[in-house]
Image (cartoon, rainbow, N blue to C red; front, side, top):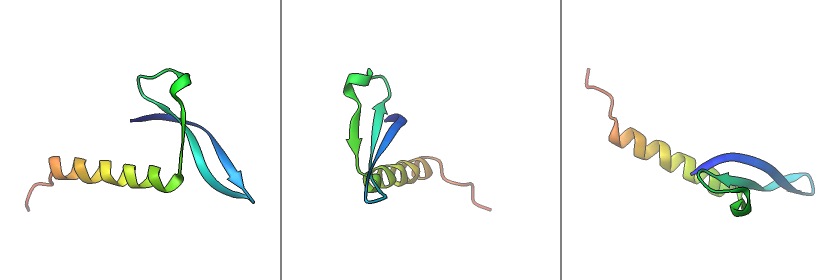
Length: 58
């Protein structure tokens, strides 16, 4: 799981990736991740949470 985004990388003014720090790991394990992958992982996390914690029926 991502702890923080350390910085980003740009090509022609477009952000192409993010250097992330992984929770529980030292900075030597920081790695570059494409923005689309971060978004997909976040949405997947939300989906799993919603499935595990459904809203009560009204």
